[in-house]
Image (cartoon, rainbow, N blue to C red):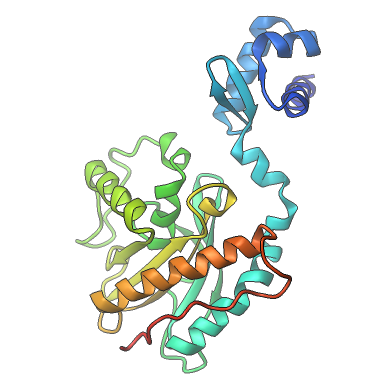
Length: 260
């Protein structure tokens, strides 16, 4: 009964595009107190979202769930050729990440044949405050951090990790302005990375691509050029994923040699 009521509310809002609690009650015959409580639960879960005073629409989380063309397998199929080309060209590891629930995970990595570059610690979740892939997503997905009480939860992995909420918020502002994020020895000494979201809105804001290498190779100039190049690559990939370009994988935007 509980799940059926939730489904009725989602169906009603989805069919009307937007609905008030009163409209939901009219179409579902739910009592107003029950409808209001269930709507608030759905908003808290990201399945509904307020779009105007008293009006609700389907939430971004639900939209991501039903976008089958954005499954891991579909994403990797489109993105991996571009990352593979970049890894071979620059002798560095390139990765694809996406938001998974309230975390960000690296779901695919392409490494060069030289074997001199690696991604540590491999696939899986990354701290929201200490990795470029996570910060690139968090900067453009405010709901990712909005539900979390950050104070006291920003673990220090190295002496360079941001552990103050004010510092993290300031860095996210910088990321939004320049379009890409950096991680400078924040999770492991001697290692750094650069990442850009696939877009600053929509499903692409929950995904990022990036590159990682040693601080010796990824100098400030190299990171800046890679950040710009990754932003261009991300834009092309975003257009491709949304069907705005042809069926082939997009060409990789020109980027500097990692050791330049």
